[in-house]
Image (cartoon, rainbow, N blue to C red):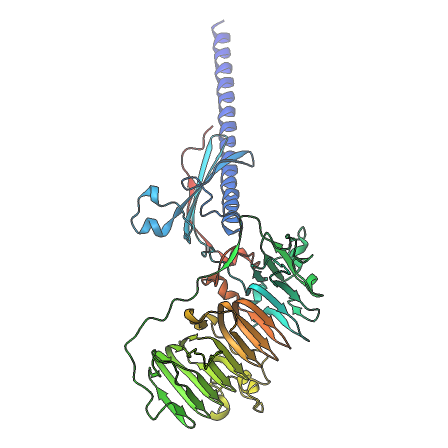
Length: 528
């Protein structure tokens, strides 16, 4: 009897131990599975957060609740909470309550807390998102955009650093396409656009086209409107994007007047330079007061302009001239309007070249009209491997533009189709605010320009074989002849010339907005 009772005790204890061990093993296994699942949920939550922050339409900077972008959001059988912190505000010493994102936030910390079956996991990452309050468009025409002629092209600058990403090219307008006020977009049948764009979305046929045109919500809706938002036989080559009722694009504010500087001296030897090479410092031609202006004439010469502000109260007339920019140069050309001079023009250049040396920066403030014929604006270039010093100097694209016979060099075996790369924001051509008027037109004929053109109240015309590498924003834009416009997508991250809607750029968002993990782990036990 005693032996039997002892045997039962041993067997019972063993059974209980076995059962307990099985339960412990089951719970440990479940905990391990939960730990894996909650980590995966946190990763998925971070993917959701990145998609929201990278989107052009979510308005995440202001569409949150005290920094919480998502609160207990159901996902994959669990929940996630996504919190955002403005890193720059935190580093400046702001309190926690004041570190939530605002409309100007660019650097943000993302905390994703995942909960699943009692297990919790948090990941923390930093992300830099360029400010997109100012929308960036390759071409923006406030009132009219006409692209016509025999063989125009609108596309990317192939020599720009981001051309290989094949981002789409965006065009914007605030025109309502009304016949009554003569506004709208016209695209001729011969206009060429890029043939390839990335990324492609098989569920969105719009992504097959490289160029999107954004127009206002009321475009094509009033009694006097055209029947199509985008008109012309080439309208099917682009995607027309109607903005929502609460969206808009508007021209940025006109440039502020150039700050007053101490009156620089005049030009030694007079205001007419007709030969040789001259190195010039800041000068003033004419005076701000008086009814008549004083013109500057530079023909058949080379001018080397060093850092400073150059003022001309009259017109700058140039023929067969080379202007080499060495440093940060600002040029102000303010012609005089009077009853004897109804249509003054600031710049009148023919067969003139502007070259920027390494690190140079040029801002031109031009009054009233502008005329450039057979001109070229770009970078100063020298082929270091070319033994012939004469052949080595000068962008071959520029030489061909000036009609010089092409000579093969160690750097170029044939005439390049595009100029050497120069950041377009280094060349800014603006109007003088006090001379803004739609009756004054900027005409570029057979002219190649690397830079930014901004004419909030004026019209710009590209005639003949003109080329633009950079961006344009104007009241009206006309692209005629065999002109070419090439956008540099590096401008996407530079303050734009318009405000409002941020266009979808395409490209690889993983490369455009990189993310850096900071912390990844369990906040507390992973038990049931």
